[in-house]
Image 1: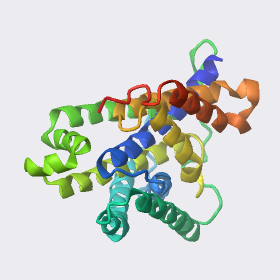
Image 2: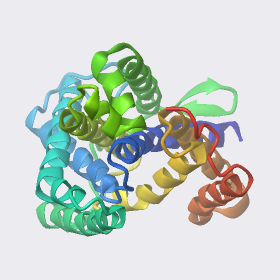
Image 3: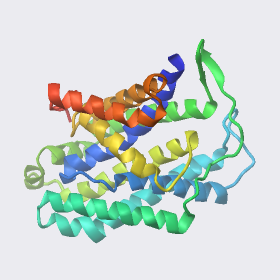
Image 4: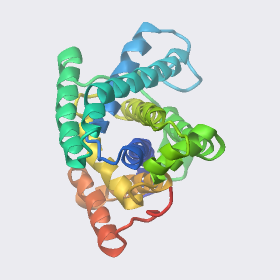
Length: 296
């Protein structure tokens, strides 16, 4: 069970990073973005392309990749942020003027289908891998084995979450984003450039989504439907933690990941997603605001 717990932390780290982007979008733009899963997919494929372009024989100790991969992650985050800004400029910006939330949600469904088919057209339907090297797992604790790549996923996720916390609480831009999420109209009156905050919301959410996609591809595989398969668990994580709460999204992602992984020996891997939805259903019945629903 200790090994399943470790696997759940790894999955939960990916879900948490993705759920943060969903929560930021919901907080500032006031709609559920179902195209967010495709940002994970594009981030993973962007990193795949540039990891090959920056190919190097150097490695980072026991990790299966080298410095070129770290650079590819940064480029993938930048390009995915650009994709989110382009999608907002072409689609969501125009629909926001109508102030009908359901229109934005339906549009995000359409954008998701379009982006998924673009991935299949460009890269094909077959799964890909960042490395064909065999990763050797090391015993961390009795009964728990992890590869160096998996440890990298957990460490990088923790660093990003701390950095996001400091960004939101210590910087003027982060405080402005929190103010806009609480009350966009009042924020605009006090002199905050709401349009600029919206752009930065897409940038931060898209970057985290890209990194989440890369980390999932590093420990599992890269496939055109990976974002589609992860979007509903990410929504479950955001709702479980409290929709609108960034820290709740982190907590919800970890809970969903651990619960799904530890259910495998009892119900099998095929029913893992059902566990996350069962937890979400229970929390909505017992505590509809979520675990940290009133905290921004």
